[in-house]
Length: 92
Image 1 (cartoon, rainbow, N blue to C red):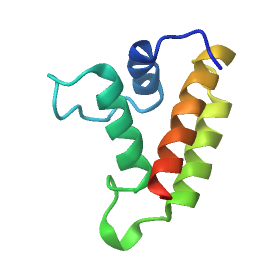
Image 2 (cartoon, helix red, strand yellow):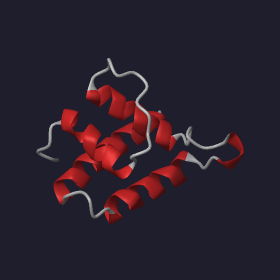
Image 3 (tube, rainbow, N blue to C red):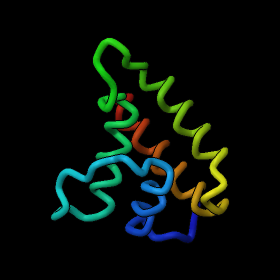
Image 4 (cartoon, rainbow, N blue to C red):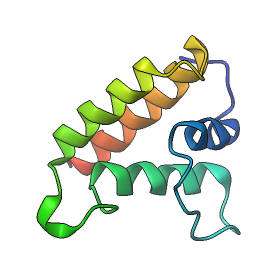
């Protein structure tokens, strides 16, 4: 597990995905980040005919995260944990 508080992970996520829009700014950062990751895994940012499966998006997202030079190992681990948790909830 990571030592980074979950509320501080949103700015780190936005370093990787700097063109993501935040819909509800009155939400807590943890809720916003969870929603952004869920939308990413469901490929809701793509046109319906070009959408990939959640497994493909998970792989692509984790690969991008792992290859990022903008984040430390702890920051990557914190975001990876959130991706895994969100993927688990999508598979229920």
